[in-house]
Image 1 (cartoon, rainbow, N blue to C red):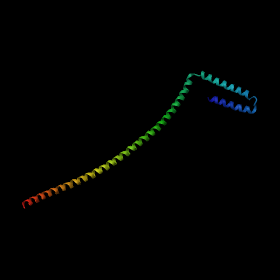
Image 2: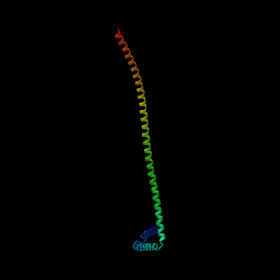
Image 3: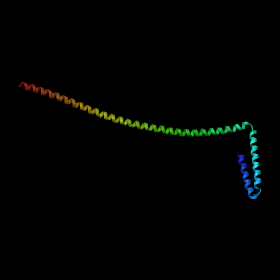
Amino acid sequence: MKNQQHDQKETLSKSQSWSNVEPTVHTAKMVTVEDDGMRKQVEDEKELKNKPIKNEIVMPKLANSRHDLKMAVMKRENMTRDSKHDLIATERQKALLELSLTVKTSEISKMDMAIKTEEKRVKQLEQVLERENIKFEEFLKENEKKSVEARTL
């Protein structure tokens, strides 16, 4: 392939130099140069066909291994990108869970405080109710005594 490109460059440079010097002979010489290039291509193809098969197999394996290597590198890059995205997603989920956990624990602590204050209030109300019951019983006893005294008089 490189030889063909090199030959084409040479023919191009030769044709450019001929066009400056001999413009009338240019087409005839160009045809012979092209014929020479075609002959070389045909000879190169024959040589490739005559070469042992091992040489042809080795080169594609190298190309395949290079391709496989490139694919592995690309997959690794994709995997690192994917793993980075996965890591970011898991970190985001972790942060959201931690946030919801802290919010819920703060709500639970607020509810616990509210429960404690309500329990204190209930105990105070129970004590007030007991005092009121005792006072009412004393009132009833006094009222009973007064009614007994009023009957005796």
